[in-house]
Length: 583
Image (tube, rainbow, N blue to C red; front, side, top):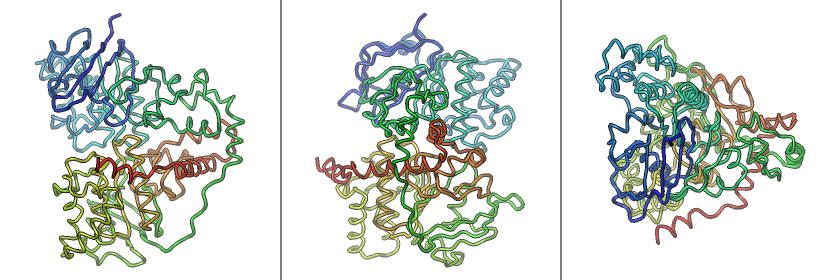
């Protein structure tokens, strides 16, 4: 059988770069295989995918050596249009993929390009819409859809052309956990029904392994550092060395002092043979302590009986009530479209509640203007590009003070102090465009921090970040929280973030508050997890599988242990940054 994709001694260097992004790639993928490609940001995994779908070299020029065959043919001979008949790509940001005014038009676009007669086109569109479960949405406009629905429409749009290879670029980045599980399940069903070759590029390894994959290819610094089955990979230290987060249950078993064996099938927690690990995991649980309870402090932000609707009679939020204490770090979670971002807009004063009150330090904020609220409450949006408006870092961080008429001397002092806190001081005279995504994220946090807010709200602070950058941002936020006493509220889909970094989770589903508890209790409660489209943590299944009677306490102890480990071996990030900038 001829390979579907074959790289032989393949290297690629972008035109503007000195060093090759890909070096000596040898990779063979057979028809009908399902392969997961993982690697840290900048490792070359996206470039590898772009070589398969033709963006390299047709959109991104550069020098290639070695050979590449896709569907047995040379991509250079096929051209971008010819390749699109073999490879269908579903982008991370699905908004960039929509063309039609309705879902049906959008799915039919490739067929219209090929002059397919309407009598053939309509049943074909119906067939793929049925397969990806969007038949009820055919008359809707793409912009009206949720993140998960948009992704299914994008899948249908590339599948309608009967491509041999489906390439998914970070399919989980913008989805809540339950919708992410459905996306991975849907990809699995497509592969089984259509025998399509599937490539998935993803940071979130544990979530991507919700369904079997044949192989995992690990890319590091432009080379393939591993190409093996999931069971074989999970018993090595390759993931750890490459800065990729391994599944939580694997980490917990290792904490208990066990060596994991491939024959115990560690790819899925549900089917893993735990026989040889149970005693050690239980012994680790018995000797490990949970985290200390923090003493109660005064109220920072209190929401009472809050209702809101854009259209009368159609409430978006109903009877929302919680009290966040000074210095707490809290996550707000729930499915796409549950009302989480609307809640943050109400707190910041961008919308007015239909009913109910929002109090800061015990005082109703209703009389305060958006500007007055902005001096106490800072909102950091999901993408730094939505916030950054100045070309230079210093000017961007100084902007909030400048518009309030602060003196030049005070601006300089406060901006420099904030940049030091954020590990950005060495870059103070740099343009924003020279920074990485993670550093830009810090600039957007610094521009809020310089205002000395009492409360910071962050919308998806780690979306699209690899594990190393994710950890840098979250450790930095934890430090701000602990040293400056700022109350931090995070809107997130990331269950790891919620477990590891926050002490409390406020759960919203269909506009109602359905839980306000510790993250461990929320993620070990099946009813709440199902209602809010969350995902029960694999640590829960591990605790149950090992016969531990209190799974949520097991999760609490795991998190406390991880925090202690981190504190014990944490290098000073700021010194590292300064050396890098000065060098």
